[in-house]
Length: 390
Image 1 (spheres, rainbow, N blue to C red):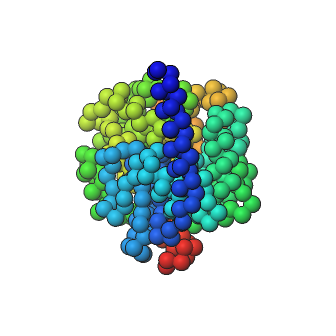
Image 2: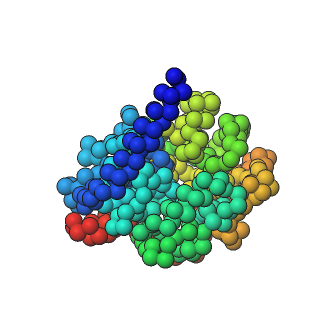
Image 3: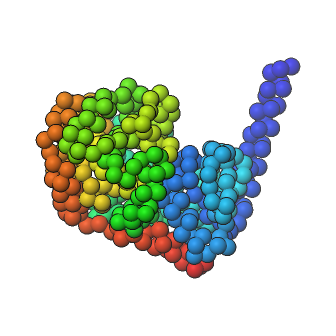
């Protein structure tokens, strides 16, 4: 009897699923609906959020939806929340004229002929190999998703000429996909506020930093084998080295990659070692921090824009090359690199802050950048023109 009930249940589920697919297929597109996705729905952030805000500023009649798995997400009142993998999300996706995402998207419904799909991506100036460059090292399901994503992409945002080349080489883009050379909307904030002391003071005050504190950001990238142990460095030795160099009170912020935010719960913080993952957005951190310690993360691009000091700490260099591989950007630019913790402390002690800043400016000036602080507005206008709502 149980077996019969289970069989009947499965048949009914398949019938319901088929009905939903048919309904989604026949539902007409609505030019007033745009749905956004950022990092699979954790927060309201990154370029998709900047674009949503800009669209609302220009035309507040557009219906903006944010796909999220967080019921308690903090979000503007002009953006409607829709839960990921819900029936409602399927219907919204099937009706939305425009879809915006900063990651490869698990489309709940197939893209329709006249839908517009914009890929903002979530990084620039990649130091590590990504996407098609390491296809044989990626999960097959991810590769299939990425190839479909590229095949239906209407436009992708670019920050610089190096990104253009990378997209063409490794993103499986269809021949009609337009590369929008506007810069990344998420960078508008740091460009437009790079000299805004009022905002810098407010951000620092928000997390208990003094305006004259010298602030170090430690922000490693994602690893397949990442654990809290990778993040447990002797931060106090780093602070002592910087205090000796700068003659200032130093504080250190730890920023965990968005895919590994749960690791924050295993770290210990105090008045000198602070949580930089949950309290601030990456662009706020970029604005207020005085030096970046990272590895293969594309967050270096934010610091290059600002001409700020960067140190690359690469204790797993050999294994990371084996796991992922590094790009020409890593090898062709004069980043200052430490391959173990002792070297890192020696570099902090020996290399001047001014020289690190000059290196960042030199690298940034060597690339053709499209960043001008107006990316959000330009993308919003491009979308609204496409849907004839400007």
